[in-house]
Amino acid sequence: MRANVGGIDRIVRIVVGLALIGAALFHVIGLWGLIGIVPVLTGLFRVCPAYKLIGANTCRHQS
View 1 (cartoon, helix red, strand yellow):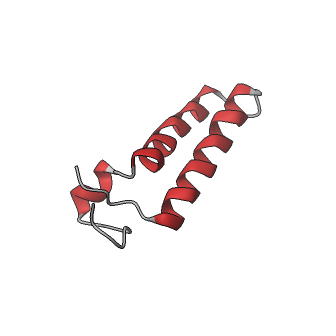
View 2 (cartoon, rainbow, N blue to C red):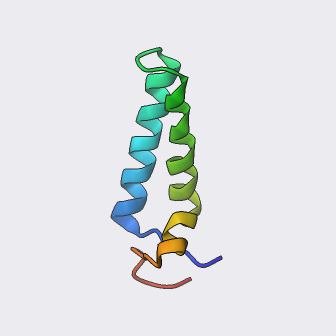
């Protein structure tokens, strides 16, 4: 799969995902906060299936 998640997008996904997971683990929000796993994984692997569906790409260079 080709990368379609760029630099800033990647950082934001990882930070927001980790914040959601942390909030869920510390009971600030419900367990639905574990959905933060999705943005963390898409940020780490640099591939977002939703971007592929809509034809979006925030990555400057194709890998």
